[in-house]
Image (cartoon, rainbow, N blue to C red; front, top):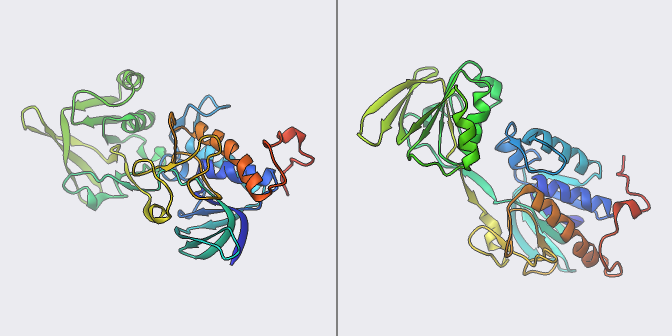
Amino acid sequence: MDQYDLLIVGGGPVGLFAAAMAGLHGIRAAIVESLPELGGQLTALYPEKRIFDVAGFTAVTGADLAEALIAQALAYRPALHLGTTAETLAAGEAGGWVLGTSEGALAARAILVTAGLGAFVPRRLPAEGAEAFEGRGVYYIPPALREFRGKDVVVVGGGDTALDWAWEIAQHARRVYLVHRREEFRAQPGSLDRIRQLEAVHLKTSCELRAVRGGDTLTSVVLEHLTDGGEETVEAQAVVSGLGFHAQLGPLKAWGLEFQGSHAIAVNPATMATSLPGIYAAGDIAAYPGKVKLIATGFGEVGIAMGPIRTYLHPELKGALPHSTNLKSAAPSR
């Protein structure tokens, strides 16, 4: 059974930064990630979506941020267990913890959970024919945006995700129909103002997507006008859902951790420690009063957690983490 100082459960942006911080401070770490690649939501859900609230970047796509974080983490050579689902948790016979996974057991003296909101399952479009075109015209995770070049695209939803996708797709598509069942949008007012300035975007409010039509390829959609029950057929070659995802924590719920609500682990914000000794959490999955769910917040929480983790692993090393400029060798291994 593989033995580590620290198991990082989750290979998204926060988990990747945690692996780099662990390596920087001499902690032997491993990443356990259920997806077959690193990056989490950045690569799986919005690789081409631009992010505006990460320090050091005016704007950065999810894919570019993931690439930088992966390079930073891998420079310290953490062990990688990809395509591996964390399932059970048990106390080790000689202390520490044993994590049962879909690929076998892993042992560690400490665990840092950075699993975001857990696994994501898309909210399915309630439209006739949508399922038949999934992945070939109907998308819950958009393909490369160049695939929409010159096409008419329907984006469904009224939140930030839908408006962000409509904006990004409009930079490539011939025409974008933004379909929302209400007149009011849940998205930030600034996002809606930006969308309204684009000639290529046509708002279809008080409408619902009722059907998706086509043969070998998607050719049109049927919209229902909720105000009068009338129907409208719109030519389109792609539909993108902005209805969001259901988060599922799965086996984590049975680990004996204290939860706040149904999808967040309660932590001490001064240490990021959970209710179980030697287990910490950071990122969207960690909850405490005043929590703000941002990638930048998760990075800061990793910095907070790493000091207590280092002291937990090496009680003789008390106090805060040393600054990287004060380390004898802060350079990553080659």
